[in-house]
Length: 298
Image (tube, rainbow, N blue to C red; front, side):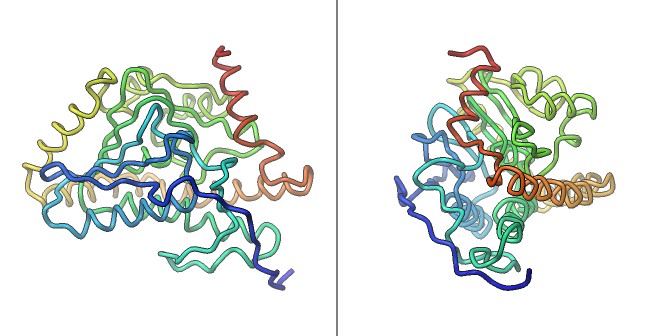
């Protein structure tokens, strides 16, 4: 099927026109996801605002280190699959060399969109020439993992947890598939196949988290770490980052993500064929309820 389709439309209501805040504290830029009402669920509005903020920080020579944080109780509940601001059917001015998605038929629509909005954007931010730190509190779920994992460092509060429950949808993990690079293979299988919450303390033991701090100390600890990094030579930091990232590529990180991306979209297409819904009928409410039940919460 090669024919284009009429562009999709949707009734979108944004609760804010500024889903991302940009602040500086000395040589440190703070990029803060600011949809606390929806636990910083990532719609395209937020994703492109994040890209604007990363671009701004990279372009500012006074900024030496970039921090990514989330306002409110949680770092990020993942991709937006159920708020009034869900904007999967909306066109945006694209940053990478991918076509618009809204007029593409069937599975091609989502396959095209997520090449940019999820996989492509995450790879783009990972390559920022300045050190990046994720400041994680509360939930870091599914798409939230992608945002934390692109950063060079993760500092987490002691009450933080990490989770990728999308196998419940029949999908083998989120698009930026770094599970087996962040965790040992058997632990990555447990994390993905059971979809259980991993407390920050356990993630710290595996090296996925650099530092654990009390919730009230998170901002202070991250700022202090960022200022120590900012005192190092700019080029030395960039070259060091490139060197370590190159080792990951030699281990097959990019190739693994490319392979899993196709599995991910095969799963979306299978869901559409068997249930009429690319998420197998799951939405934000049902996923949150299942997550809480699994964790023993009321």
